[in-house]
Image (cartoon, rainbow, N blue to C red; front, side, top):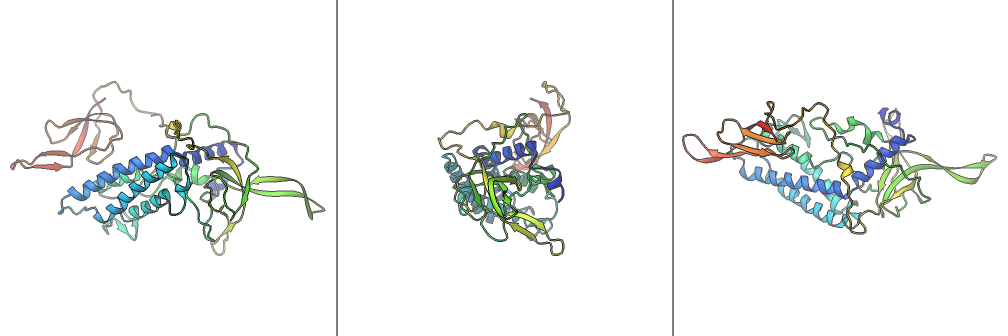
Length: 368
């Protein structure tokens, strides 16, 4: 798409700062720890759905996915243990985080295979409410661009994750057909990008250190246009990428051939911009700047006043911290914090006295 080139320019200082910050965020301990925590919440909810949803319910979740789901949780734990020590091999082929992401694609492809909503590994229609509630919990573990630090095997048909910055910066890239991932909130003062180092590798060569690398074209002046001499000149040739030590530096995507639709894979030089030495001292620094929240623009002030009419269903994410009441169920009021999953209600069935789990509509009574 043309906007990838025209709207975001890697010669622009603001664009460079944003991409640099995003790659540090996507390779941070804190982001992967949040992915792990969100996945644990989903795992527990999915396990409960498999075990408690009535067998007569047409909206059944497959127990066959549970081993993969639990394996992912174990992989996240193993990866975080290593990353906390500054070990970044966890993103290489066959290693914990790389394997977790591979498994995630499997789970999302076979999450709900009812043919009314799914076909050949793709969601084809909006899920019913109970299933969508689980789907939201699953997607809460996903971050756009999370593949950035993953190893790219050096194969003819594969190239660097990012050739141009639009894939990271354009808000439309965060929108999918049936869900949307949150666009990151950048700090007001983004740090400057380091000037770069003298460390350069070519596509296909082994990457010596973990960090953020920039593809560059290297040239020298020539005597009579034949013999190169003088200092090297390095010109940006695309988007920054995060490369892990021990992998082979990837190619970048070239021109698309109009006649065939094929895309060239172009060999390039990669210059180290920033070496990642985080966590090697065993310390996880404050990384809260990676998770700033967007300031509300039209929300009314919250002074504990009676709330406007807001309703959500069991399994939805709570939109407002406050006191909530289950409709059609007397004396069922609870306090729920924003971001938590709305619960079900255990109550007696009229006429029989038997206590059952009910999926209910919750009405906001008062903001906290």
